[in-house]
Image (cartoon, rainbow, N blue to C red; front, side):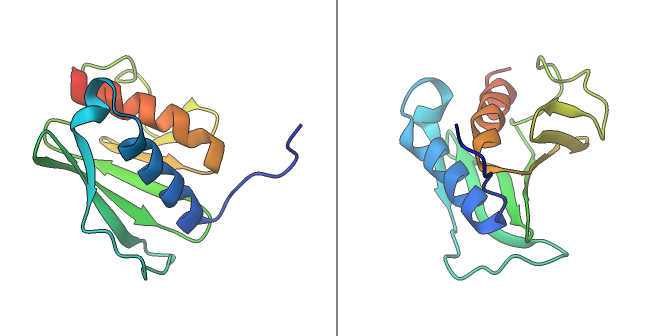
Length: 126
Protein backbone atom coordinates (compact mmCIF):
# COMPACT_ATOMS: atom_id res chain seq x y z
CA UNK A 1 0.00 0.00 0.00
CA UNK A 2 1.26 3.48 -0.86
CA UNK A 3 2.04 5.49 2.23
CA UNK A 4 3.05 8.80 0.62
CA UNK A 5 0.88 11.21 -1.35
CA UNK A 6 2.06 13.44 -4.15
CA UNK A 7 1.44 16.94 -2.82
CA UNK A 8 3.70 18.96 -5.11
CA UNK A 9 1.65 21.44 -7.14
CA UNK A 10 3.73 21.01 -10.29
CA UNK A 11 3.48 17.23 -10.19
CA UNK A 12 -0.29 17.29 -9.51
CA UNK A 13 -0.74 19.60 -12.52
CA UNK A 14 1.32 17.24 -14.69
CA UNK A 15 -0.85 14.30 -13.60
CA UNK A 16 -4.03 16.26 -14.38
CA UNK A 17 -2.74 17.23 -17.83
CA UNK A 18 -1.88 13.60 -18.54
CA UNK A 19 -5.35 12.44 -17.55
CA UNK A 20 -7.10 15.16 -19.56
CA UNK A 21 -5.14 14.44 -22.74
CA UNK A 22 -4.30 10.76 -22.36
CA UNK A 23 -7.82 9.36 -22.15
CA UNK A 24 -9.48 9.67 -25.54
CA UNK A 25 -13.00 8.64 -24.58
CA UNK A 26 -16.16 10.65 -23.96
CA UNK A 27 -15.58 14.37 -23.48
CA UNK A 28 -11.86 13.82 -23.03
CA UNK A 29 -11.60 13.03 -26.74
CA UNK A 30 -12.33 16.74 -27.34
CA UNK A 31 -10.15 18.05 -24.50
CA UNK A 32 -6.69 19.53 -24.91
CA UNK A 33 -4.11 21.26 -22.75
CA UNK A 34 -2.84 24.52 -24.27
CA UNK A 35 -0.49 27.36 -23.39
CA UNK A 36 1.48 25.08 -21.10
CA UNK A 37 4.38 26.77 -19.33
CA UNK A 38 6.93 24.08 -18.45
CA UNK A 39 8.92 26.68 -16.48
CA UNK A 40 5.99 27.79 -14.33
CA UNK A 41 6.94 27.94 -10.68
CA UNK A 42 4.19 27.40 -8.10
CA UNK A 43 3.56 30.42 -5.88
CA UNK A 44 1.42 31.31 -2.89
CA UNK A 45 -0.73 33.53 -5.13
CA UNK A 46 -1.08 30.86 -7.87
CA UNK A 47 0.85 30.66 -11.13
CA UNK A 48 -0.84 29.79 -14.40
CA UNK A 49 0.46 26.38 -15.48
CA UNK A 50 -1.76 25.83 -18.51
CA UNK A 51 -5.21 26.29 -19.95
CA UNK A 52 -7.77 23.66 -20.89
CA UNK A 53 -9.84 23.62 -24.08
CA UNK A 54 -12.90 21.55 -24.73
CA UNK A 55 -14.34 21.27 -28.23
CA UNK A 56 -12.17 24.20 -29.33
CA UNK A 57 -13.31 26.54 -26.53
CA UNK A 58 -11.16 27.55 -23.58
CA UNK A 59 -12.95 26.20 -20.51
CA UNK A 60 -10.40 26.26 -17.73
CA UNK A 61 -7.14 27.41 -16.23
CA UNK A 62 -4.86 25.43 -13.94
CA UNK A 63 -3.11 27.44 -11.24
CA UNK A 64 -0.05 26.05 -9.47
CA UNK A 65 0.47 26.46 -5.73
CA UNK A 66 3.31 24.88 -3.74
CA UNK A 67 1.20 22.01 -2.36
CA UNK A 68 -1.94 21.88 -4.53
CA UNK A 69 -3.52 23.13 -7.75
CA UNK A 70 -6.73 24.87 -8.65
CA UNK A 71 -8.79 24.18 -11.74
CA UNK A 72 -10.84 27.26 -12.58
CA UNK A 73 -13.71 26.37 -14.90
CA UNK A 74 -15.64 28.75 -17.16
CA UNK A 75 -17.84 28.83 -20.23
CA UNK A 76 -19.33 25.46 -21.09
CA UNK A 77 -17.47 23.84 -18.19
CA UNK A 78 -19.73 24.59 -15.25
CA UNK A 79 -20.35 22.94 -11.93
CA UNK A 80 -23.99 24.01 -12.18
CA UNK A 81 -26.43 21.28 -13.24
CA UNK A 82 -23.93 18.52 -12.48
CA UNK A 83 -24.04 15.90 -9.74
CA UNK A 84 -21.68 18.23 -7.86
CA UNK A 85 -23.77 21.40 -8.09
CA UNK A 86 -25.18 20.93 -4.60
CA UNK A 87 -21.73 20.76 -2.98
CA UNK A 88 -21.32 23.94 -0.97
CA UNK A 89 -18.29 26.14 -1.56
CA UNK A 90 -15.61 24.98 0.86
CA UNK A 91 -16.86 21.40 0.98
CA UNK A 92 -15.14 18.33 -0.37
CA UNK A 93 -16.48 16.79 -3.56
CA UNK A 94 -14.29 13.80 -2.80
CA UNK A 95 -11.13 13.12 -0.81
CA UNK A 96 -8.60 15.59 -2.19
CA UNK A 97 -11.02 17.60 -4.37
CA UNK A 98 -12.70 20.61 -2.79
CA UNK A 99 -15.07 23.14 -4.30
CA UNK A 100 -13.45 26.46 -3.30
CA UNK A 101 -15.42 28.79 -5.53
CA UNK A 102 -18.53 28.73 -7.63
CA UNK A 103 -16.54 27.24 -10.53
CA UNK A 104 -13.20 26.34 -8.94
CA UNK A 105 -11.81 23.03 -7.72
CA UNK A 106 -8.81 22.62 -5.44
CA UNK A 107 -6.89 19.37 -5.94
CA UNK A 108 -4.59 18.59 -3.04
CA UNK A 109 -2.83 15.38 -4.03
CA UNK A 110 -1.99 13.29 -7.06
CA UNK A 111 -4.46 10.43 -6.69
CA UNK A 112 -7.33 12.93 -6.43
CA UNK A 113 -6.75 13.88 -10.06
CA UNK A 114 -8.96 10.96 -11.14
CA UNK A 115 -11.92 12.36 -9.20
CA UNK A 116 -11.23 15.86 -10.54
CA UNK A 117 -11.32 14.50 -14.10
CA UNK A 118 -14.70 12.92 -13.36
CA UNK A 119 -15.97 16.30 -12.16
CA UNK A 120 -14.54 17.98 -15.27
CA UNK A 121 -16.30 15.45 -17.52
CA UNK A 122 -19.61 16.03 -15.70
CA UNK A 123 -19.11 19.79 -16.05
CA UNK A 124 -18.62 19.76 -19.84
CA UNK A 125 -21.25 17.08 -20.55
CA UNK A 126 -24.12 18.80 -18.75
